[in-house]
Amino acid sequence: MALSRRGFHLALGAAALARGQPLRPNILWITCEDMGPHLGCYGDSYARTPNLDRLAARGVIYRNAWSTAPVCAPARTAIISGLYPSSTGSEHMRSLVRLPSYMRLYPQFLREAGYYTTNNVKEDYNVEKPGRVWDESSTKAHWRNRRPGQPFFAVFNLTITHESQIRRRPHQLGHDPTKVRLPAYHPDTPEVRHDWAQYYDNITAMDGQAGELLRQLETDGLAESTIVFFYSDHGAGMPRHKRWPYDSGLRIPLIVAIPEAFRQLAPRDYRFGGRIDRLVSFVDFAPTVLSLAGIRPPSWMQGTAFLGPYAGPEPPYLHGLRGRMDERFDLVRSVRDRRYIYIRNYMPHLIYGQHLAYMFETPTTRIWKRLYDEGRLRPPQTFFWERKPPEELYDLEVDPDEVRNLARSPEYRQVLERLRAAQREHALAIRDLGFLPEDELHARSAGSTPYEVGQDERRYPLRRILETAEAASSLQAGAVARLAAALDDPDSAVRYWGALGLLMRGPAAVEPHRAQMRRALRDSAPSVRIVAAQALGEIGVLLELASLERHNLFVVLQALNALDAMGSSALRPYRAALEALPLEHPSIPNRMRSYVARLVEHLRSKWA
Image: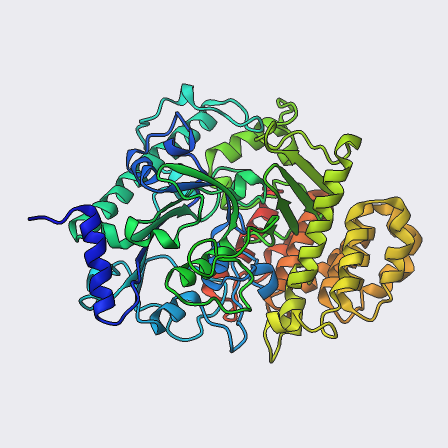
């Protein structure tokens, strides 16, 4: 006679106890890429996601789950490490840094505890792997390859929703493009509607793939002994979602289904088919999976477990970041509570939509920029192609598209100041390394690791650097004297932000301090020389710094970005020198090999 569901749970527990072992769950993570909470179970009536909706019906959805970064590599780095990428120097897309020797990645803890760990198949971490991480990481990785009776932790990453698949042509649309809801910042054109409809088509295809994995779990008789997570690595792959630390770029779907046998590992507000409002971040995933496996998370992890015996209190805020995106530099930080999101733009002289070669492969990006250049758009559709304000504040309850900036509204002053303080306290608490130019980050970390440098006030005087970065990015005229004084600071990062603050304010701020800026052309730090050369229009200095034969990749990228800001008319006399720049060097890792060529090609296109 077949066991009832309750009988199965009792038998499962009794068998484990008879062996003298605690009852440990299997854990399955089904992940996808570049997708916001656009599922039926989240109330999206345009989505067709029957399999994931059924999973949510036997689990819960988290309404306030955030990636840590709006692009894959730093987001996955936060998951695998339990650390903010901004504290380990791994925030840039893509980069590769070492962790301190005492740190390990969460699958290593699971393997030590006897779990069979598999990853199918994407890794894309910005940190070097400290030894063997997975039992298997390949297209063949599967829980079915484990030893009999061995508990497993398995990740399956579904790629059909990736940004690159939105623009795959030809494609016969399944969703009606006339019925898609366009966000307020996107223009209403056939290209944009097609991309959004194809995005939803891809979600439906992914839902079928997720359903197949769940059927395999049922077929193997493991559904009642396996905790299932479903989530995406960040928000949608559409422009102004992906790569931007707005709620639209960071908010993800998160479904967690815990079978009855492991109900003790669920939070008190867990109800089948329910919704949980707790703030959850990617840095929480590593400590959570360790907690579910009965492993106490190490104290150096910066996240908080939200399930299992080691679950901690809900954090008051979620934190997001934007650093270098492929070939383009930027520095943005965001923080949100359950209602408001605050954005701090530390480089407000840069437009949102910097030309990034990969992003411009999407039809929506190209038509959106063309319409802007032709003067055929009105706010808020114009904002993406214009400079950023120093601060942004949005009320997500009434403005989910994040287009009505409340940062200057007296009515929201207290909210602004609270979230601004939360961002500052977070940066100081985790020792945010994003305020170092990327070449300086690596130079200071020689013989050590970025994380250890960040924790050392002597090597990284963060408070002084942060105060200068805040003054620089405020764009306030009253900060000019302070920024000029920073040019004489003994720390190169302070000098960098002092020079950058003058550059941001334009000739009116640069000219009175021209003598100091000319001295900065001989600074020991390349990043300071680059900013000074851009401010003074010293194209010859920038060309020398843009040579891979003389400088490392990060110096060259910064110099090329500065050259791009000079404008085509200023660069035209230097066309031959630009075209002679080397595009490759053996020292460049494969994952970053195309960045210099992309920038040089963009510079050439200006006079093509």
